Structure formats: C-alpha cells, structure tokens
Length: 389
Image (tube, rainbow, N blue to C red; front, top):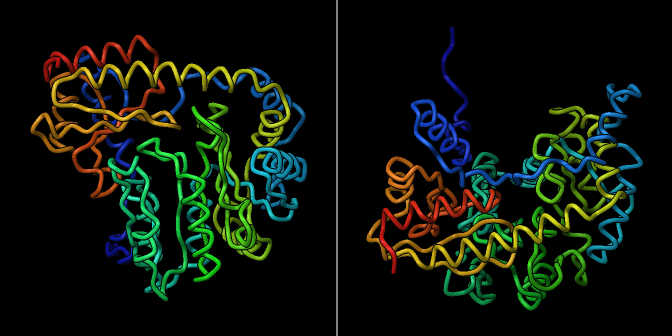
C-alpha cells in the first residue's frame, strides 16, 4: 500500500489547544484534578431560544441539502446585522455561510494565494493563519504584536513589510491570543495603504461582540475597503454555539462566488437546521449574549488582578475576547516549559505563547471562559507554584 503523503502536508500546522486538551484529559484519567484554561470555548450553554429554533427546524424536516452559499433568510439576517453593527452594507449575494468560521480562512487563502505570494499576518496570532498560508504555497510574513505596543503594531513597521508580492493582509481585532484591539487610527492607515498598494484584507472579527471598552471598528467600513475586504465572523463565541459549526464570510460578490465553489468541492453546504438556529440567534433576544460579555468582564478583572499577584508574572488587561496573555519571563522560564510545569505540577492547563507564533515567547495564554471558582483555583495553584509578590 502506498505510504507517501503529498509534500504540502508537511506545511500544514495544527491547533495546540486540542493537543493540550488531550494531554490534560489523559492526566485526568489517572485521577489528577485539572483546571481547563486551554480551550477558547464559552462555558455557557447555547441560549434556549436558539436551541428551540434548531429543534423546530429538525422537527420540520430541514435535514436535506440546501444552496451552498446558505439559506436566503440567514444571509439576509447576516447582512442586516452587519449593517447595524459595522455600518457596512452588503447584499445577500455577498454572504457565504460556512460550517464554522475556519473555512472562511481556507477558502479565501486558497482562492487568492499562489506560490510566492506574500501574506502578512499577526504574530502571536491564531495558528491556522500561518498554517494555511504555508499550505497554499504562500510566504507567511509575520507582523509582531508586541506587549509594549498594547499587542498592536506600528503603522510604519507594518509598511516596511509590504512588497510588490503582498497579496493579502490578515487582521484580527479583538485578538486571539492577546485580547488586543487595533485602533481606529491604525485601521485607517492600513486602509490607505491597501488602496495605494492594492492588496486584499481578511478581517477576522469573530470576537467583535466580546469587547469591553468602546465600539468595534471594522476596516471594511473605511473608504475603498468594502471591495477589497472579506469579513470573517460566526456564532461560536458570542452565542456559545461552538459545536453547531456556523460561521460566515461577507465580501465582494466575485470573490464570494469563488469561495462558494470551494465550499461545493469540500463541505457541499452548511446544515440547514443549524442555519435556522443562526437566524434566531441574530434576530431573537440578545440579553444572554450581553450577560455573557458582562460575566467575561468580571472574570477578566479577577484573572488579571490574580496573575499580577503571582511572583514573576505580569499581565495587561485585554480589551476584548476572553483570553489573558501574561508575561512570565520573571519566573525565569520560557513559554513551553512554563506551560508544561503548570499542567504537570499544578494541574492548570494553559497554552504556551509560542503556540501562536515565535513572538509569543515569554507568554502563556489562559482562557477565562470558565467559572470564577475554577479561575480562583487556577490562580491559587499558580501562587503555590511560583510564590506571591
């Protein structure tokens, strides 16, 4: 039996969170108590009205193939919601509904990037960006998100990364893993350069509703950007629908059509009962999502204060998402050994900052999408391990 894989498989990365989860589960199987702060998944149940809508759709026979781009009613709901939230008008033909938000990254990069094309992406950042750029044969060009810059970047430094081969820039605000937010001034500068240099933008806005200060700004709303930007968003985070697998892209019709062709060749379509649940999520009551963000804010304040009390650790307060990204260099340790020690000795599952790129060295990521009780338990274990300031 042939055993030789395609060479491109060697360029495909992974998402470390699931590897750490497996290790943590293996320790739990031996009787060790583990506090799980590794997975970026809200610990809230999907709101009951959304569950009921999904159940009703199943009961009504919405279990068959549908149009690859998505149900008309969901595409209409997405455009209306985005127009309210972002101030950007799209037609239903400019929406692609996907089984999760990750396919948006795959489809856009596969549709645009050829051998040697350069893609600028945030580092530390969601690891699938770099993985997919490499898989498609592109050249991944990291823009460092530095703690001293509020986990953002300087426009002048960004401009130096641009070359005639720059075809795509990936932005993520609020950011995973740092919780950083790109300022309106920076977005305006990037937009100006995008028009001048003629590159595409993938704007990953999956955490745009988990924002603690101010109002979300989308680069797609800026002059000249609607026609060169694909917005990535979805239902997993704000509606606690991770297992429902429901995301979407908003962008120029010509590119959305090509991305839809990729969906036809891979997933065919997104489950219709999931899509109808998504309609209810966008058009139904919003009290539970708002409550969830308020709880995340309380947890953020608790975990940041607690981390800053641990010897050798310092932590900036994230402006969005639900991750803390503390600096642990004061412990004398690097990211991976620190994460390993926390898991094996303290029973706290976290991710090393290097899981999100080389510029994550010296940090670890903790998801505070967990109960206050478990957050306090994890902080107490860290204090016992490293000491208190």
